[in-house]
Length: 259
Image (cartoon, rainbow, N blue to C red; front, top):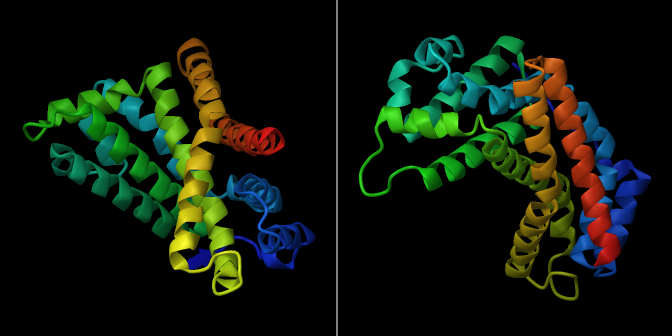
């Protein structure tokens, strides 16, 4: 099975701007915005990747499946066995396997799909654990109820925000991590690996803060598209993800200007 990798940013003029900012010890906000600008074309193409699209389809559809009759059969159609629905760990493993099976059927995996998969599973894990009982192992019914709760506009907006925050951070880190090693050591921007790790953590927090704009947009989009228009085609989901990325890039730029 082949693997589709994202582009080679280090050859671009915009990427040389990123390197220059790292050399000059520019603020994190400037580096994040420059990296987002440099990777814009690659991420736009990633939104057209079938594996990426399958993950975003799950982001939108899984809560609706949990809310509707025929939940187990619908999950089985995705490749998630009924036995996987007995625990949160099983559910997340089932989602992971379903995405992997889809990539296998496509005959290729992709960097974009892998980043989106990780962002989805991390977001579901964090958001569902926060809502499940903590004293005892949750029942399958409780797990389904929590998953279904993201079928409301407000809760979907929270889940979508965490997904795009994690995805945006992973996409920036995908490119920056190759370059940060060249700026680590005595006399360089990062004196050691610990300082470089601090930068990565700050970048993660920065993208999460910037993702607030996606939360506002996602709630309105969900209410209008799912409940008012009753249409949820892949094209609609693709338009949603592209615009969410656009809002993230815009917010990163606004935060840079106001920093």
